[in-house]
Length: 368
Ligand code: ACO
Image (tube, rainbow, N blue to C red; front, side, top):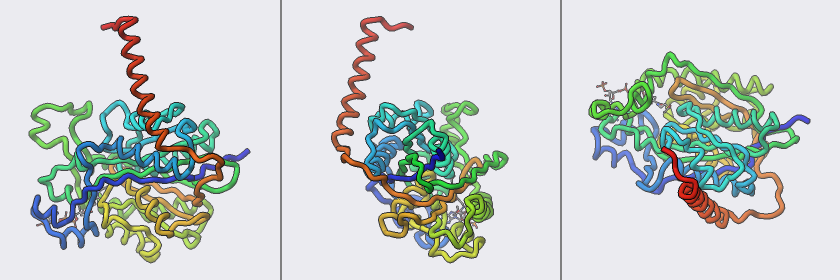
């Protein structure tokens, strides 16, 4: 039996607090006109102190499960793509797994910068199509506001926080994710990086003083690279899917810069209205930008069942990729899941597990 991987649920989590271009002009030497003209961004959302990549990711995942009406215990796989993980380890995906009560899921993080969601979606698709996983949740979650230097006007104007998630479910009905392109070019890794904090350059007072824990970017080079790869990856995934560009109903690109999307549209000889654009509201939310834009496209009626959609992204690594999808929507299901109750249960279960571990430590004695 041939299995297909369908997108049956979707959700986002957007921090309430916004930061407009005018707000930024009070922090660094910039202005609304420059930011709008060069990027198209008008405002971005910034996580509150109690919010994190894991909390936003868990909220988005639960919303996606609700749309799919899928019980968290039926999730087999969680992939969280993020460049601003809660910690180096444990994986943000593990924290999300615990928070949503996905007790039967394996969970791991995937790092491919802004292309991460495309890569994660393809990996979950392959697991579902291979038959080892029935239900997967793919999350893009970022709090890049914590990693930008708020004194650096060349980067702090670009990024925003947020999360988006898809539920992927297997079925023998044709459709869902039908082709994918994944590419990397590590020779350009230095064009967009976070130099310190990893094993190459552990945190020291010097790395902090030198600002090496902030995002460093060669904006012009990243721009050139992005305009080159977006159109090519889109063409390639459409070809792999056995379709023509005129078959595609909507393209949902990574939301980094309006001029980059415009260049891709020109490269593909398509009008801009074929592209979903919402970066004016969110800025560049990195790997969360594609699912956030998708949910907006669904909610505004721009993306409907059976539509053919291309997701295309690029980012640090360097990485780029695209997928072609026949949009599905929720599978029919009988009994509605009570998600509020599930959330409470997940919290209680998590505390109980910690308590049991503590008691076991007392009974058996802790080593070391
Ligand atoms: N406000 C005002 N002036 C500014 C600002 C600012 N915020 N930032 C830079 N400038 C100045 C520069 O200092 C420069 O001045 P100069 O000519 O006197 O030297 C001038 O504006 C032009 O600077 P450029 O860097 O050439 O501006 P550019 O048109 O390239 O736009 C930008 C910069 C918006 C960053 C653009 O290069 C870009 O979008 N690059 C792609 C970035 C991107 O998408 N990154 C995310 C990748 S996804 C991921 O993996 C996270």
